[in-house]
Image 1 (cartoon, rainbow, N blue to C red):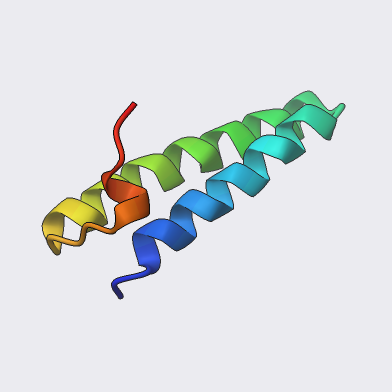
Image 2 (spheres, rainbow, N blue to C red):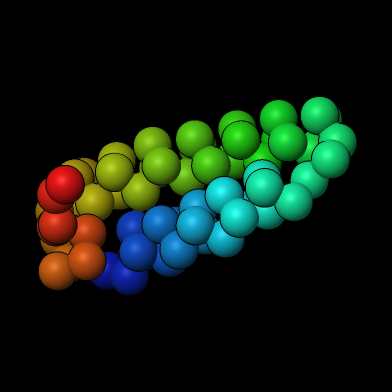
Length: 60
Protein backbone atom coordinates (compact mmCIF):
# COMPACT_ATOMS: atom_id res chain seq x y z
CA UNK A 1 0.00 0.00 0.00
CA UNK A 2 2.87 2.36 0.75
CA UNK A 3 4.09 2.27 -2.85
CA UNK A 4 0.66 2.77 -4.46
CA UNK A 5 0.90 6.58 -4.81
CA UNK A 6 4.30 6.22 -6.51
CA UNK A 7 2.94 3.50 -8.79
CA UNK A 8 0.11 5.83 -9.81
CA UNK A 9 2.60 8.64 -10.45
CA UNK A 10 4.72 6.33 -12.59
CA UNK A 11 1.64 5.25 -14.51
CA UNK A 12 0.80 8.90 -15.15
CA UNK A 13 4.28 9.50 -16.58
CA UNK A 14 3.87 6.59 -19.00
CA UNK A 15 0.38 7.74 -19.98
CA UNK A 16 1.61 11.28 -20.60
CA UNK A 17 4.20 9.97 -23.08
CA UNK A 18 1.43 8.06 -24.84
CA UNK A 19 -0.47 11.35 -25.16
CA UNK A 20 2.32 12.59 -27.43
CA UNK A 21 2.06 9.60 -29.76
CA UNK A 22 -1.69 9.24 -30.18
CA UNK A 23 -3.41 10.59 -33.26
CA UNK A 24 -6.97 9.76 -32.26
CA UNK A 25 -8.87 12.51 -30.45
CA UNK A 26 -10.87 9.88 -28.56
CA UNK A 27 -7.73 8.07 -27.38
CA UNK A 28 -6.12 11.38 -26.41
CA UNK A 29 -9.19 12.34 -24.37
CA UNK A 30 -9.29 8.96 -22.62
CA UNK A 31 -5.58 9.11 -21.77
CA UNK A 32 -5.92 12.70 -20.57
CA UNK A 33 -8.79 11.74 -18.25
CA UNK A 34 -6.81 8.75 -16.93
CA UNK A 35 -3.86 11.05 -16.20
CA UNK A 36 -6.15 13.34 -14.25
CA UNK A 37 -7.75 10.50 -12.31
CA UNK A 38 -4.36 9.03 -11.41
CA UNK A 39 -3.19 12.45 -10.20
CA UNK A 40 -6.20 12.93 -7.94
CA UNK A 41 -6.08 9.33 -6.69
CA UNK A 42 -2.38 9.43 -5.88
CA UNK A 43 -2.72 12.61 -3.82
CA UNK A 44 -5.85 11.40 -2.07
CA UNK A 45 -4.34 8.03 -1.12
CA UNK A 46 -1.08 9.60 0.08
CA UNK A 47 -2.95 12.07 2.32
CA UNK A 48 -5.60 9.62 3.54
CA UNK A 49 -3.06 7.02 4.65
CA UNK A 50 -0.37 9.56 5.59
CA UNK A 51 2.07 8.07 3.12
CA UNK A 52 4.99 10.26 2.18
CA UNK A 53 8.07 9.07 0.35
CA UNK A 54 11.14 11.03 -0.67
CA UNK A 55 9.92 10.96 -4.26
CA UNK A 56 6.36 12.02 -3.47
CA UNK A 57 7.36 14.56 -0.84
CA UNK A 58 9.36 16.73 -3.23
CA UNK A 59 7.70 19.98 -4.20
CA UNK A 60 8.53 22.24 -7.14
